[in-house]
Structures are given as C-alpha cells and as structure tokens.
Length: 267
Image 1 (cartoon, one colour):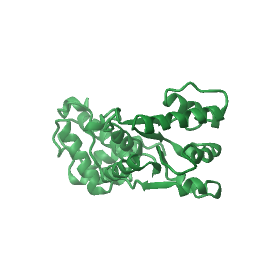
Image 2 (cartoon, rainbow, N blue to C red):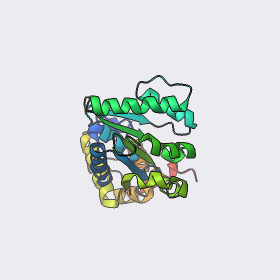
Image 3 (spheres, helix red, strand yellow):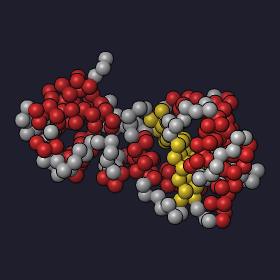
Image 4 (cartoon, rainbow, N blue to C red):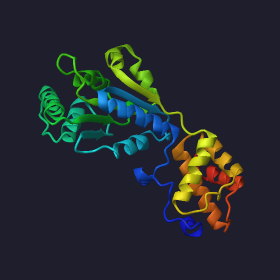
C-alpha cells in the first residue's frame, strides 16, 4: 500500500534487500575491512553486536563480493547443535560425506581445507553465525580445527558472529587458547542519529521515492525509538510509511513515527 502511495519501486527496508543495494554504514565498512584482512591472512575473527544491529547482513554483503573461484565460503547458522552435529554441518558445507566418528570427520575437514589452500590456491572462510549459542565442547574444538602443521600455519579464516555476550563467554578460562587466536575483533555499535537519517534518506531515494518524506524531527524520533538497531529502525519506518499512506499524508511526521513504534511494542 505505501509503496504505491509514495511511488516506490520496491520496499527498501525489507530484509530481502540485495547486498548490492545496501547502504554502507560505518559498522559495515569496518566489518568488511576486517574480514578482508582475515580472509587474506587466516586465523580467527570475532564480529559481535546487540540484536538487530545488522551483523548478519554486514557479513552477507561482504560474502556477496567474494569470488567463488578464489574463495571457498562455508556459512553455518544452526549453532544450537551437539558437537557431532556441528562436525556434520561442517562436512556438508565442504561437500564431504560425514562419518560416524568425530576423529574421521576432523581428518577429512582438515584434508579438504589443506587441498583447497595448498593444491588449488584458494582462501577458505568458515562463518559461524549465532555463535553465542555454540556448545562449550564446540568452542573448545574450534582451536583444533584451525591448527595446521603443529599450529604453524593459518590455512583458513574462522569468523564467529554473535551477540555481544559471546565476548563474555570467550573470556572464560576454558577458552583461553581460542581467545589468544583471535586476530580480528569488532563490536558493531549501531547507527547514531546522523547515520540513521542518511540511511533512511538514501534507501528512499534508491527506491525512487522522495528522500524527504520524513523530516528531521521524524527521523530523529525514528532513531530515538530504534536505539541504534537497524532492524528496529526498518520496522518503525515501514510502519510509519503505512500509517502515512493510510492517512493520505505526503509527509511522515514525528507523531506518526511514535504511533508506529507504539504499534510494534509488545511491552
């Protein structure tokens, strides 16, 4: 409804947005720089954020730029699994048939990574999303998965993506060895008010709409209720546009934004 009323070719605030159409936030730019470095050098990387800050989308946008002929990417998001299930997922990601024994799967995974890196000259990147849910046994095994030639070479990049609490988990003594292997660590801070305004206006413009549908006061209100979360901001903006279209309003004001936020609240 609001797309037609505001002359939008698409909904620019949808989660289905193509990575190529993304607005590059400061957080996203920082994540991409660090992942570029990690992919070149190998090792363990950590990307954390509070819920809704766009960490998965930032990684997806980075992954979309990778050349599949030079980089093998394995993405895993089902993290609430047992140790054995984790190894099976990893085998499937590399196109391997999983064995019944963990030691056999470990051997095959390392052999596959070694072949990709040494024989085919490819970079290997494994991304584990929602890593805050990983079982302690999986976290302990990760340091062995990245151990090649008696821990003398980095043949793969392992990226752990999760909520901010993941850093607290990794600070515990049992994970000291894994923590010492972290070469890249970035915590996303979310959008400040200026970034939020620039984001909404650019996305409206990309959709073919008037970038000034929201005035400064409305955008300030949208940022205030979103708390820096890009997911929450998207929801509030879409709801406010819907309210505006229902009221046949050519501009969305701060009151509409506050009403939109109240409708989304479950408190």
